[in-house]
Image 1 (cartoon, rainbow, N blue to C red):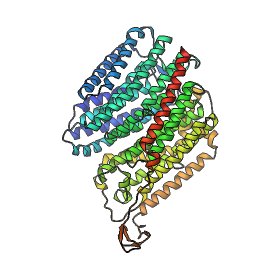
Image 2 (spheres, rainbow, N blue to C red):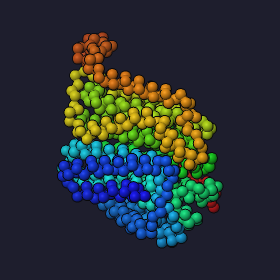
Image 3 (tube, rainbow, N blue to C red):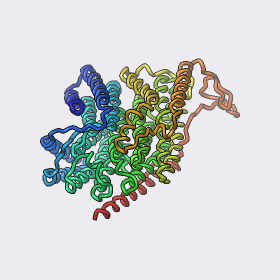
Image 4 (cartoon, rainbow, N blue to C red):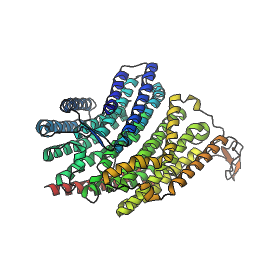
Length: 634
């Protein structure tokens, strides 16, 4: 238990110190060793508990509950004050309602509830632990160099506040994945919401403030659902332990109502339709925020609770609700990504879509689907954090995050382009893990005989290939007479990007081991199925074939990268090349500049059109599901 407590407390101590630090040099001396300590502690904890199954810990909770309640009230007052200051009143009202429910629970119900095991760790917790501890810590190191450049555009240096929030967030995420006490999980859940709120509004521009309040407003809806689930479990069953909830009868009305409410909280946190707009608005934040909170880690808290609750899903109203929302979000968000040229917005829609696929896997509730969901969780966290950080570095050096401005990136920033290509390939090409996991998800959906999910993953995956292919084509194009601008990239950025790119490749090689030693033991403990889905789905020859393909791809890529300058030739442009590879003489003898532009199909897949469809379908799904649940209870 000492290791778990260390990981929950140590980042907060570092955060408090960083809040007082204004010097760049001192900040570097603190952040890099602290991040290294968190990474080492995370790996040590994972190794210690990897083979033990679920381990539970007793911890005196009464005083801690009281302190958490005081903090919740204080956070509510902060939101009320900021809402009044910026004339945004919806969030304060929701915060008051949420805090009122919490106080009512603590004053009237909590005394009748006893908690034996407040903390725990199992294989799914270990997956999240490694994502938070390794990827999260790497992002804080990357932020040192990135925020140094970011600060050049502002006279108000608030980087101490930025790094304070980043490390508090890491503490809160560890708290979520280690909490068996559902009230504790709720507290840490709300801390992540408030950290996100503050980081989105970091620049304090009008757009940043507007988007930060959108985020906190929508997530408070999820928070209210969470506290309502706590009230139901406490008042009806006198329980507040996650493992006890997962062992209860799925046929009990109040049990499934609580599961539905927790699922709604997860759906909001995972930015699923109709709540997805907060994640899109969050892209206004500095890029490390996008990578840490809104791609690799915070939104994973939402899918973590969905996967954790997966044994309670299946052929019931809650399972159908989660399946439908996840599948619809995957399909529609993938379509919306086609119409985007802003790289961070493409990544945001891709994140929403892939989280939808994980949610759908959890909703199916079978061991094959949950296996696919956990593997998607792992690959998406590593790959998407790499891509977000690559876009941040590109933006600072070419002055744009627009994909259309990335022509010739392979010559302007060859190392960065190579890393970005690895990230994009990891998202949709064989033999990288995202594609393999999607194939496993499709198999699970076919076995579930759910037509909506089968259609969603088939068409959604096809659409995914379309928008990733467009971006990839931009990166691999080599344009003449482009100046290399990589010399200004900070060493912290290169280090983190290199480690993440290597991790994308390494995890592909480690795919079978991850399945055998982490994911399959978890499935055995939850579903009682002693089968490794990687073998049952793909066959015994799969591992050799995939590893061989990966080795060949790496060899080809290294060869291409090393020889790119020697392969440069005069291009044929359907006209007479004028000699600079950037213009040609047309049939009428006029000089025409080369223009490389993608097709965005806004008439078909524009955001407004997709959002209306998604809003109508998902709201109707939620109304029907909760109507059926409440009707069953009453």
